[in-house]
Structures are given as structure tokens and as C-alpha cells.
Image 1: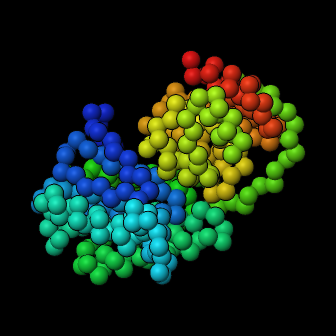
Image 2: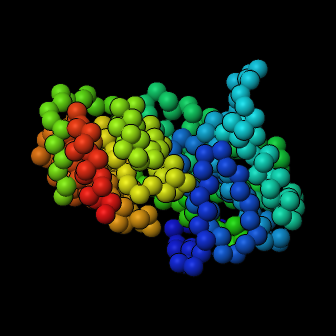
Length: 183
Length: 106
């Protein structure tokens, strides 16, 4: 995996990894892409099998005794990571060959910094418990990220999509009119 | 809620996001024909969202309308510079808003 170099040609098929998704592929034309705030995405790669995958989770673990719909549990890292590994294995990856990169976990709003940090800590802890090496991270900070990942080549790119730091919600000015102005 | 009702009543399909980051996260999955954004939002404001949508490989021709209580020329100019297609001051007029959307979509 590498960072900041162009990794996708125009003929590549881009698949968005939305909140709660865990996708894996052995198609060399596929690029996984996602945008992360405090969410975390883990990219897994098995170079020998030529299989890669990416997930996108919102929170580390569900609250105790939750009654949430099973489909919504995919939002949590603890479920999302299992789904991602299973998707990798299903496409021929071997657990012992998996390498990981972690992205996201930014502090996007003052007072909510623990969400991103908790997600990062969870991802590290989970990968460690599964004996999956972490090759690199682009995590924390205060800006949203766009991540692209070519699952077969194992190439990834991560860039900030906003340079704007954490901010307070501005006070709203009084309304004036309903006019429309097209530029 | 008001905006959603106004747009769905006029036949548009609406995807909602809580702020700029949420919008970006949902944008690629929803692939909307048009984006309406406020300026004052937590996490990533409307300027940041417009810049992000206009950067990189995300649709350059996507119409982006700003719907806001802000009325300053400075902010309007900044939105225009960032790549906004139009500026609408709240409270919005349903018919004017619908007409503006149809105009930028066609």
C-alpha cells in the first residue's frame, strides 16, 4: 500500500463503502472509496490471494443489552470487522496473511472527540487480538478524509476533504427573504 | 422537515444529511442530481461541503444550491467562489425554490 499517488485509472470501477458496509473483492478493476469523519475504515489486504476489503463503521461497540435491528449492528466496529474478515476469507484470503491499514476517527465536533478516538482504539485492539499487522494509519486529527483502496493491488490513498478545523456552530442570523439568486 | 415536504410535494426524491461530513458520506451512495446545503452546520460547514464536492473526482457539473439564513455579500461571494450554483435566503418560497431547482437541472 502507498499513499498520495494516483491509484485509479478512469476505467476502474468505483464502489462506495457506505456507513455500515463491509466489502471485499478480488477484481483488479475495482476501487473502494469512502468519506470518513469520526467513522473509521479498515482496509485489509492479502497480497498472496490478491484479495482486499474495506469497511466503514460509525461506533466501536453497541450499548449493552441493545435491541437494535440486526442490520443496524453493522454500524458497529465489532460486527463490521467480523463481516469484513469473513468477506475476505470467502474470496480466498487467509487470515494469517491479512495486513491492515486504519483510516478516519477524526474529531469533527468539540465535545465529541471520544467517538473518533474510541473507534481508532477499537480498530487497533481488534486487529491486535486477531494478530493482523497494521501497516499504517492515517487517523485522528480534525478533518474529514476521503479514502480510496484498490483491493487486489493493496494500494490506498487518503486525503483530507476539508482543511477546516473543529468549529462551533455559528449563530444563525435573522431571516431576510426567500429570493433565489443563480450564479 | 419543511424543505423535505416542499420538495417531495413537487415530485423530487430527497436524501437528508445532518451536516457536511454526513452529506459527503452519503453522497456517493445516493448519487443525487442536485445538492442543497446550508452554510452553518457542525463538523463541516456549507463552504467546506461545496469545496469537497467540487474537488477531485466528484461530479464537476453537479448543481449545488445554498439555502441559508445568511445574507451577507461576503459569504455569498465565498460560496460562489467555492463553486455554488445559486443562493437562496431562508425562509424559502416553495414555488421559487422548485422553479430554481428545475431551472438548474435542465
